[in-house]
Length: 513
Image 1 (cartoon, rainbow, N blue to C red):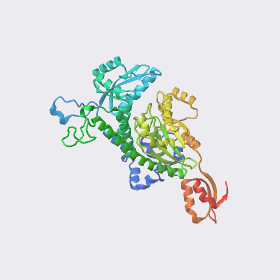
Image 2: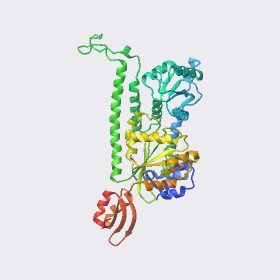
Image 3: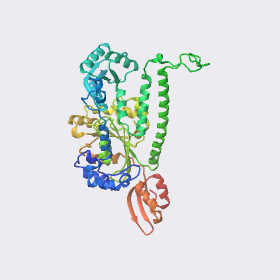
Image 4: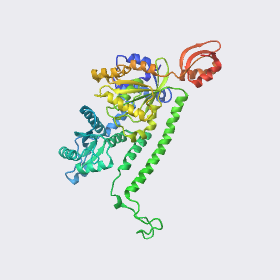
């Protein structure tokens, strides 16, 4: 076991009482090959051991870069004098939230608006006011009705807000009519989530997925001057003399925009198709080697990345914000009995996750649907964790992951309400309670994970000649060694190995198991 591999989580969390036992239980390897990251730059690793506080890991550097682009609260863009144009500063958008409460209790409506406020703050906005309305269904014209729209207009004027965010997806007509009443920019929940994704996307695949989702959302919501910008066909003299088939009112500006967006969507889908092929090849390699896969999935900001860092020392970005992680991270690990598996961190889910995102991120979400085991991470400190469980399982059903075995992991138990935990234990007796920050419950999680992980290897007993040391090396790398003894004829091996390797060892088998 290489205990030096487990060190990345110290900068995000304090050592817990069960940490030493966990370090003896799990061996972690980075990337697609064992110890790749640590053998790649030994000099840098040595410097980091000597001065750990002076060498931030990848996640810390990404977090610093992200915060460096934050807008500063309190600085204004309004100009009192045109000569100040070169000295103006960017400020936070000032927003008012509005939600329609159609079912559930008042507490459910408050929780929903609180989540919308967290989304707005993650996007870089300053929340000034929040309003809710009880209706049987949203108003088809303005979403909140004529009277509430007037009240919202007064709240916007009183607070000096420049944006209204609705806790729901608005139709194009509702968007336009509500803007006509409140006289400021109006966006809906879907546009807000897409904006957060656009800010946090880093990889080429993530950026392409976000752009595809944004264009799919924008396409039916295009607006402009319409027919007043129609283009006459070109030709001799113009004025409709463009030739046979080219006379008429021409193509409007909005039609041109739609055509260009459709072309861009088609191009992005082709690019993502090529990227999906590369991802599928990596999955096929893991399937061929029969490596079980475990996916960390759950509600956004439930602590999945913190848990990955605690389990593997991956050093991925951790931030107390919604949708901090977009790109999946895969790490190799071993159970206490030596079985290898992969652990994947995935994008978080949220209530009413926009369907454009589910479609655009489908290739990424297949990490969950193709997994052998899902660690369903739940935020134990949330006021309503059961609602989080339901929202995530709805997404599981959308991506055909409803039949994958699930192990519920309640994170942040150090900050959770005891009554909430008691209710969760009653409804889900097999859950595991952990704290990625303190390390509490991590050994129990490792044990539960090992018990839930499927055994897909085959048991072999073979006497392998010394000339076939490559088979012994593969057994150590890909399988789980039960016993090994060096004799005069060769190496007597007892192990659980993948089926392809078991077939290669068949000719040296001592007994058939």
